[in-house]
Amino acid sequence: MKHFWLIMIFFAYFQTDTYKTERLNMVKSQIENRGITNTLILEAMRKVPRHLLVPENQKANAYKDRPLSIGDGQTISQPYIVAHMTDLIQPKKGMKVLEIGSGSGYQAAVLAEIVDQVFTIEIVENLGNRAKADLAKLGYKNVSVKIGDGYQGWPTEAPFDAILVTAAAEQIPQPLIDQLKEGGRMVIPVGKQGAVQELQLVERIRGKVKITSLGAVRFVPFTRDEKNKW
Ligand code: SAH
Image (cartoon, rainbow, N blue to C red; front, top):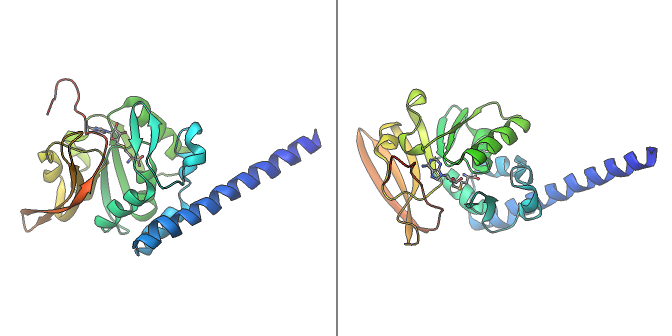
């Protein structure tokens, strides 16, 4: 019996270490080597245990350079896209950030390592509950997860320094623009499902809205609840 536990502890330790090695390699080869230099983001991604936020059957793929299925018909982006979108909002300590599309909770965890407060909304109940439980288990006290249609944003917590939308919207939801602080930045993939989507940066500068296109991307659709179609 004693040996059994010793072997189990050794195995658990060995596995944790394997994931850590994979994670550090992922940051080096997929993120740093592709030009992300923001050390806050690199440090956060070296820390967040992505394998503990994806479903059990995807653990072995957690650090691979490709999107992953997380169940309920949803797919999460490859790590580089998370780094790129995080980079675009210029995250800093002190910021309050809204994310639409909690999915696995990974993007929220990366943000939570850097900024003060993260608010994230997920429309699929199962996924939202799982992300909430997993983020709590990992000790993220500065992340709040809500189930609902992110189109309306989170009015009671607005305004936000930055908003990150991780599903492709047909148009930029006006409530999200309204909930952006003066000087705030929003990153959002815009376009119909199946068509080419474009990553857009929305900035609120002296009351005006400036939109910059940042190239083609592919995301799962930003869905609306039954009574609120696009
Ligand atoms: N940021 C996530 C990846 C999200 S994938 C991560 O790091 O894991 C996109 C997510 O957006 C899916 O989980 C999908 O269910 C969710 N979604 C789609 N439309 C939404 C809406 N209107 N409001 C909130 N979430 C939405």
